[in-house]
Structure formats: structure tokens, C-alpha cells
Length: 405
Image (cartoon, rainbow, N blue to C red; front, side, top):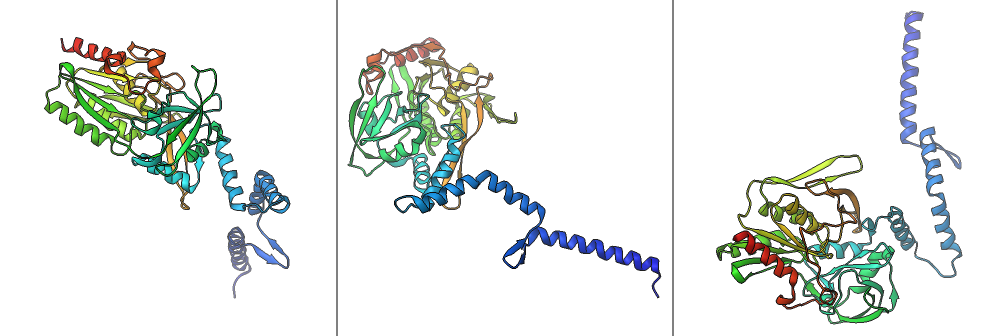
């Protein structure tokens, strides 16, 4: 026979094991009881918190679907609710994108899309603001310039709060016409611009040899091919025995950070290119190696130079690798990541802010050139000025010649 003491121990073990089993089972399964379901306390607390947090949203969705005078699209209500969630961050660079919007973003960074070729951002005044037109696109040829405010597209009012909507309106079949209503600070009244859309195939790098054997490379933005194309153009110029190099980043709205870093690594010696810092103070530092081009260097910038182009200019300036010439840059010092979702939609969000090698955050401030040369107002609005009129370029040539001598 089992002793009473041993029997008590066995019974206690069974009770403990049964309690553990029931607790585990209760956390995984709900137990039906007629028209009711028994759930454990942690599951109940979870759903109660969900009700407090999202109950109003679900209630209003049901109300509209039931009471609105026409049938509404429930899926669209959810899409716009998610958009509103991202707008609540109050950061123009953080947004949720529908499937078509996300596809357009991916296409743009790959170098080809249909539209007019302008880069836009939400302005501090709440208006759709032009960062810069892309070189040799319908937007540039129509005279769109940095800091133009787009008030409407084909008669539909647009604001910086719904930037993706504005971009979608400007996109269209090549050969079709779009009409923009523009406000420009130098004019008293808004004016309309008619633009014929084209298939925008971006060639982001071009080069030539200027007088006195000075190499010139123009980078219009940073897409997936930019660093590779830059290296090709640079090698070609070096084979022609150039004595100095000018890199033109004017009206370059930025683009892919990795491409910018690859180009900086070709130009700079061993130094910090840029570092980023997140909300927790965690830093990621990007450095160049010891290899560099052994040529006098000047970088041209203006107020249309933003984001990645400011990173490149800032690394050259802080590393004393060359002279920055032109006017103060746009001032975008935030870093975004893009995340795809399984249903084809996606989102982008600001993950950190970046600092130049000497620790400057240029967001909202911009980079002041070593040599400030502001173009006359009438030339700032001119997209294809003659070389002798381009006093910023002429100053950069003068800087290079001084270095050569």
C-alpha cells in the first residue's frame, strides 16, 4: 500500500500539472459555453484594450457603411484610415502607400516612369512644393523651378497633406497634357503651365571637358545606376588627363543613399562620410577608404540640392577635400526606410537623422557653401542658361584654376 504521505505528494503533483495544463490551454483556446465563450483574463484584457483604442474607428466605419446615402467601399475606408495613421506622425516624409503608389515609387528609383519629371515635397506652408525639376524633362522645359508651389493639377486642388495624390495626378500616359496651377514668390498672381507628359527615362550622370582641361560631371539625382555611371564618366575624364574636377549637384533632389556613399568613397580619402542617429541615440557611421582621386575638386550646389546631394557636399566640405560653390542647399537632414507589405502596398518612414562629419544636422538649415554665389533672380528661373551667364560655374572654374596653379 502507498503511504498517506506519498499519496499526498502524488496528489499535489497531479494538481500542479493539471493547473499548468489548464493555464496553457486557456491561453491558446477559448472554451465555448452555449452562446458564450470563456477566455482567460489576459486575452480579455487584450481585447478590452483594443476596444478602447480602436472602438471608435470600427464604430464609425460601421456607421458610414450603414447610413451613408450611397454604398461605400469598406476596403477604401480602411486604406484611408491607415493613411491617416501615418499622417498622425506629422512628418511629410513618413507615409503609407497604396499598391499603385508603392509601385510608382519603386519604378522612380529604377530610373523610368511616366510623368512630367518634378520632385515635390510638403512645404512648411502646407502646399505642394517643388524641390527641383529633373534635368531634361517636361517639367524643366516648361520652366518649373525650385520652391514653386503647385496649387492644383488639372483643376483639382492639391495640398502637402496628400502628396501621393498630387504625384498621382501628375503621372499619366506619355503624350497626354496636364495643367498645373503654380504660385511663385516672384509673381503677384498664380499662373497656369501646360505640360505634355513623357516617358521619363533618367540619365542621371553626364560629363564633358571644359576649358583649361577641367572635367565636369553633372549628377541630376541618385538612382540605382548613378554610382556605376559616375565611375564610368570619371574614368573617361581621367583618360583625357583632366587637371581638375567640378561636380554639379544643383537641383539634385537626392535619392538612394547607398549610391551617394559609393560616389563619396571614390572622391574622399579615409574619413567619415556621414553618420546617422536614431531616437535611442544609436549611431551608424559610414566611412570612406583611403583611395581618392588626386585632383582639385569643386562641388556646385543651390537651394534645389537636397538630401543625398547634401550628404555628398557636406562630406567634401567637412573633410576639406574641395570647395563648395553656389547658394545654400535645401536642408533635408532626415533618413527614410521603405518597407513593402505582402499585399503590394508599402510605407516609408523616417528612421533617423543624419549629421555631416563635423556633427552638423542641416535639416531645415541647409549647407552654406564655402564660396556663396547667388544667381540673379531672372537666371534662377531660367532652366538652360548660357555658360557665360552661369556665374556659379564660372566661379567653380576659377577655384579649380587657382588650385592647379
